[in-house]
Figure (cartoon, rainbow, N blue to C red):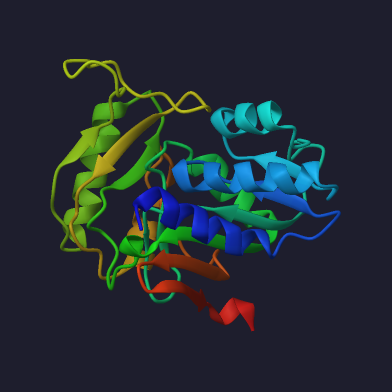
Length: 239
């Protein structure tokens, strides 16, 4: 089964958790887009949901496919968020932000009663960190913020390049990637993060850091699609 089909399989299982009348947080990325496409078919068949998108990219796809949208200002409490992940571990801690929407994704997830993660099985890891950790930062004081991140990481025994994300156009393009909120993203290649909580706290203590891609104690369920079928992981929050 190719990676796209695995994403569709995971999205299809997640869709079974969507009920008529739900206020639904809708994630960003290639897996979330497959969910939106399936959701749109269900909407066309008669189900009624209100979606709060986590990015302008997701919002555009929802409008194109006829999924009714709202905002967190209008709908500040959500029943369920369904989103992808760049990495997920056995405790359902996540790394997210590969698509550049981590701040809005975390805000929407935190406003939801439940969060379901959908991904192909290759995203499951024993320890987070092989995928570079996205850190959303303010433009002002970028060099100072980068240095502070490197020092905080070193204090936790972490090392690796902390690089500014650039747009994915020309191979020689050096224009920085800009989030929907107007911020920049640093990608931290730590390789392995044994103590995610300590790193989360250390990053949040840096004034120039807007948010980071460690999603801790937010996901209730992870639906992972692999060659052997669907695996569903539950957190203690799902009990």
